[in-house]
Length: 410
Image 1 (cartoon, rainbow, N blue to C red):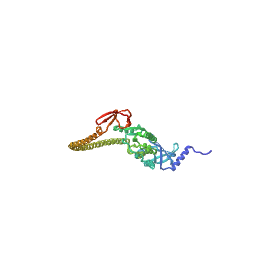
Image 2 (image 1 turned 135 degrees about the vertical axis):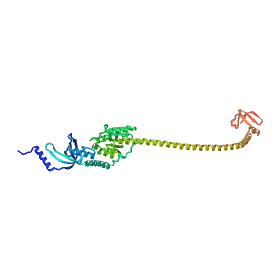
Image 3 (image 1 turned 90 degrees about the vertical axis):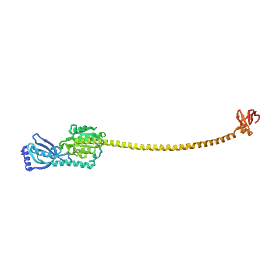
Image 4 (image 1 turned 180 degrees about the vertical axis):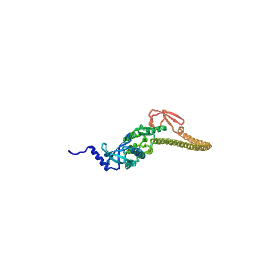
């Protein structure tokens, strides 16, 4: 019969081999796939490594941080990064390898370098910003002008978030007529990117109704903000047709969205304060413009009134001068009128005398006295034999009387 080992014997051999050959601690890098703190205080992790595509897992291992060690490391890590160990983080860890006959292969974590995790986050952010810079869109949203007044606000946030409540309360207490609409989104965890992108698409479909977009989320662990460190969401914000303002986390927090947004504010209430101050400034400026316009109108009215008074004075002077000139002319006419009338009468008398002479020369009696006569037929004078017929009765007027006759021959 072939010799063989039991599973326990084989596992014990593997355990002895690992203990003999990996009897020291080693620094290695890995990504956290799962993280859980048990009720007994121990922290249990699943570590992975992906290929260059960032999709396929090429290595996987279980890891433990025992309670006493975890209390020290967790406090140090939180102080440095502002958060606890979360899935998706990359860690630089000091480990030792163990192989338990019943539980298999695992790593025990003895130390963590927080600086590596912070550097990885910063590195990813820099890669995203560099990619957007190469596309020429990293400052695209910043170049959009802000509407005046800035009062129609599209909000991306969680309806139940305290930050959203503080934001709305601050706007309402301002007394300004803001018009707001919430486009709900997941603001924590793996669904942040897709949810916020969907909200942006919904706003884009009715972009004409809004002056700007605000993305707000209250404070929390720094790891809760990892969803805002994504290329897709950053590109969507950079290319968005409306100005996008951010108020994500605490004052110390900063995400890639803050770099590509039109305006970055520290917190949701800081965004609200900006909008309130901006609206108040618009009101102040409008009041100032109104006052300046009123002053300009008053000044123009005074100028026009002064000009009108000058015109009236000039017209009055011109009228008086015209009246004076006409009065002098009338006086002159009154002085010369009798002479002109006398001359006109004399001229008319002379012309009348000439007419009388002309009439006297043309008088029928004068013609008759010269030996002429007037022949009439039925009261009308006859000047041609063509108007006569044999037997017609005629009347002939002479200088000293008239005779009747009958035509016997023509």
